Length: 188
Image 1 (tube, one colour):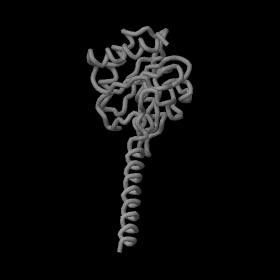
Image 2 (cartoon, helix red, strand yellow):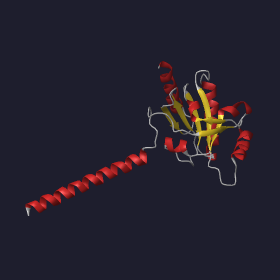
Image 3 (tube, rainbow, N blue to C red):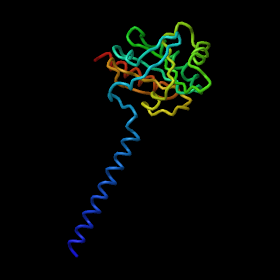
Image 4 (tube, helix red, strand yellow):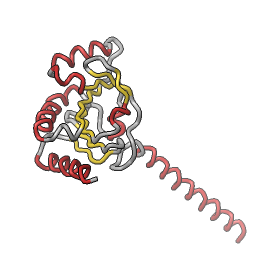
């Protein structure tokens, strides 16, 4: 009887351990795609500028970068507010600023159509700095819903590592967080 009890307890213990390991694996899988400050370079992606040039995510390496991500068409107003605020309040000679329009194109709409529509809204002098990304990779990396109505501001260091991220309307607190991240980059 003791040996049967020992075997049952051993089996039960290994089952509990397997359940715990599977739970941990599920948690890591669920949250593993969320970028964390200093978590490494961005996932590779290919985008198109509004001027028609194909750009690789490697272009984000080499200089500190501010990305202004528009996760949905409803976030366009929020993006405009961030663009106006950031471009007037930071030294653009020190930091690369790029607007990324994340679009999930329906099968009947081409990338050229999306670029044409975006060109109507974005001033011409920002066409080479505005990227169309037909992928949800950025939202997945940042843990942002693709239907979010607010822009996401991302600060990357010169290696492409995430330094800071804010999501929401322009506020003094969010601007302070971005400025603090940029100051950190300046002292490195």
